[in-house]
Length: 43
Image 1 (cartoon, rainbow, N blue to C red):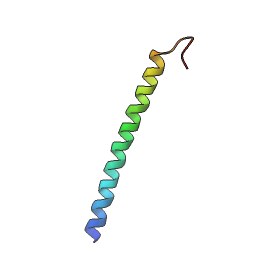
Image 2: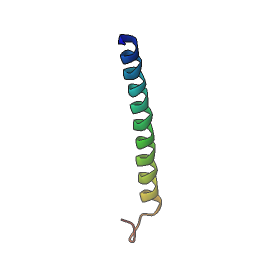
Image 3: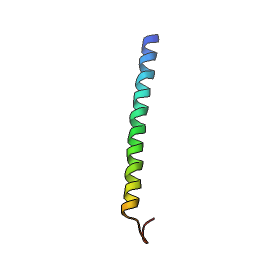
Image 4: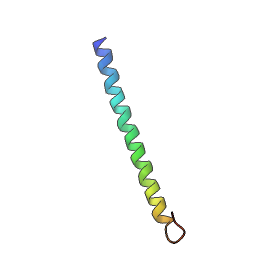
């Protein structure tokens, strides 16, 4: 059981890193979109 718990924690950490990376990529894309769509009409 100890090994199973350890493996689950390691997988959860990896999943969180992947989610963080996806969130960062999405935030970067939104920032680039805002810059590209900027100007008087941009939000």
